[in-house]
Image (cartoon, rainbow, N blue to C red; front, side, top):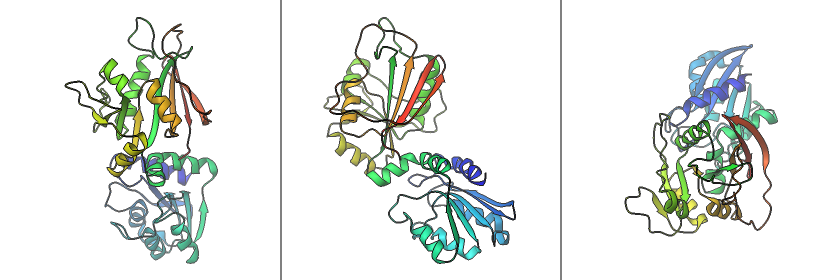
Length: 316
């Protein structure tokens, strides 16, 4: 349960830690929580240090539960493993390893060398800890943003409905605005730009900041468009965006762009909103793919009258 609490605490850092991951930590001694902490902002104390400060001398002989492997390198702050060792903790339970090559097992190795008992979370909790930082993990490991492909379709696989502006219902459309608000960038293709002139802004959800709004493809953009044109290859553009600190992209393009990203193996997560309607005609969800795409960890849940199917193409 202490790792569950640490996952809850980590969420308090959402939006403030970039480019760092969000992390939560709980210290328990003799069955009692003696310290809690989370990473609030980049350059500030890490979650482990904040929990240790809250615990003080009560940390000695206790157990640290932390959602991400403690760092073992000097960055903007000192190594967390050294603070853990100095505090005299006897046991550390970690939610997930840190994919950063400066850490990636080194933190746990240092703790073991010093005689600290180290444990990894159960597979279920470890998965939750990875998902919590899925964008960060992909940005670090693959050198590109985590790409979520959002699609909306009728039960017969059409992406438009005759005489209707919308495919899905109001609840689904609101959720898309929440997804935009939680993404570093939102993108469409030039076909969508020319057909719909989308703004791609996150509206009506109290967004703390607006995502960057992108158009992949060759221009020109229509006069007055506020989108950023990204005319290069998808791989090159994603690499450049990663270098600019973009960790997550929500892809909202039509069938052409969705097919291109899937064919290039650049989609990490799929979100498919399915509306309880039969269009009978219109463009289909995807074009031809060079090979089948296996989906992992498929889940389904209702969103208003629609159903949201979510799955991973690449696990974080």
